[in-house]
Image (cartoon, rainbow, N blue to C red):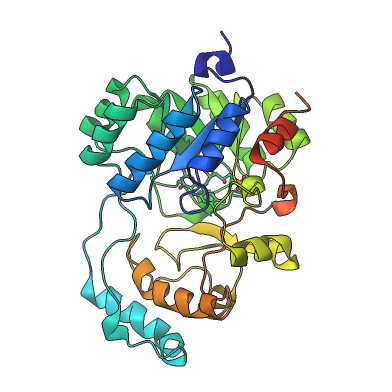
Length: 345
Ligand SMILES: Cc1cc2nc3c(=O)[nH]c(=O)nc-3n(C[C@H](O)[C@H](O)[C@H](O)COP(=O)(O)O)c2cc1C
């Protein structure tokens, strides 16, 4: 049995989970087209997550992937919080934001017992994790639903760790990838390499199937990673202009502009490194800042700036997640994009 048969899909194309930028409509379209549609649950409260998964379940009988972050919830460090707010103070002043009115607290929740309860109800075919794995008892609950488990690795060491901890499939995420890096065993960004460097090394190191992610934007890219030993390609950025994406107008405009040729890893928006189109806050503070509080606490002080700037039509404080290769972004239905991505196989 080959990988696609084992997963129950027709095409080795996985639409990357993209919390905030794609919801049930995207997953339904891709799964019904024969790929593996995904939904990122990191920003969804439990009730909203249940509704989204029910919507997918009602609209397709095909496999789909439910994705979670699995960071350890941070303890608020008041010193760091103060330093971060003072770094942002000139921007807060500019927009007339009173820093005392900024709500503290995390904006993204990790996989939890409540989320596992929803998986018990919905029983998706695939569950995937970013930032390592949840604690063993929660991973066991996801597995007990019968779901196949996937997790992102950004180094050979992470791939070996995930395999040793019982993951069924590894996603090798090259540094070109848009959105958050799945990096979890180190904070050293010099370990982060491109898809063509990472993928063959991971394929060689582990026995489980490997999915390639990062910079794959067209049919030739999909075919190339298959030659390098990938069992499937996971594509994120290329789907961001599809009508089914929930990408905002400001984000869409940035992806279509010259600006999309300039991306960087930044921790300013959440506290963890993620790749996005360079904007004002990244230019003025530097894309990586030691002042940014631990993930996801950096978010709260940026959110009001983002809201004020967006109301004026500006993406200066918006996380404009994008991979290094936005040339595959097309304003076509996700089903058509999925078929086009598989066209050279
Ligand atoms: C807008 C956006 C949001 C993302 N959100 C998630 C997420 O919620 N969970 C996750 O595992 N990966 C997320 N990723 C990373 C993707 O899984 C994948 O690694 C990446 O999109 C592949 O590279 P590409 O963007 O060059 O295609 C996101 C990527 C983007 C572009």
